[in-house]
Length: 215
Image (cartoon, rainbow, N blue to C red; front, side):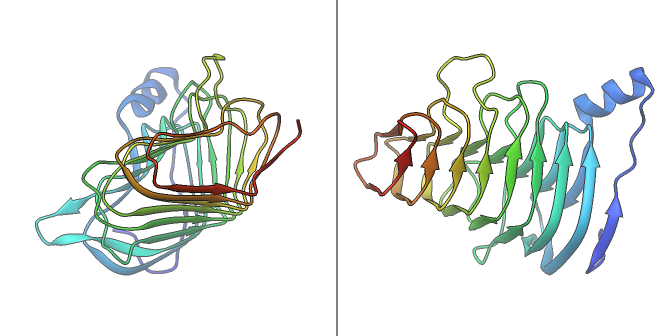
């Protein structure tokens, strides 16, 4: 378990066989029962999951992660479970290279997850898939290089829970946000996008306004 105020870089191997096994199976940082956890200046490269938040028979995680980085991970951040007071993730850099989905909130999550001043880039399918029973927030974040295969995928796909997306910069000319019918409430405001604003609200419970495109 990481100590409070952790400063570290997860080791990796560049030997092909070992690296491929690591990329297929490895999990760099795992958080389960931990309270008020402070994590500072961490980085990992080439794992199946970079930062995994799960649960044990003693509880789940809440905490503050500052200056985090996950490069070339299949899933940079996976939130399976967290505490209601949630996860505060700031100044993060999350990079995908092989058609991955960098950020996933699972259906069983009952905690809030907030990304502030983070950057998501690299060639991938989508930048975030959001589910669960609480709120996922993206504030002042940068998104680029999604929809790598030009299939019309959205950068953020919300299929459950609550979503707040505000003040973000969508730098790829592809659909930006999908809000599914099972999303309870959503607020999408004050974002700038490349190309036309393409925000698909299927929920009927979203406030979508003041988003500006280049076309």
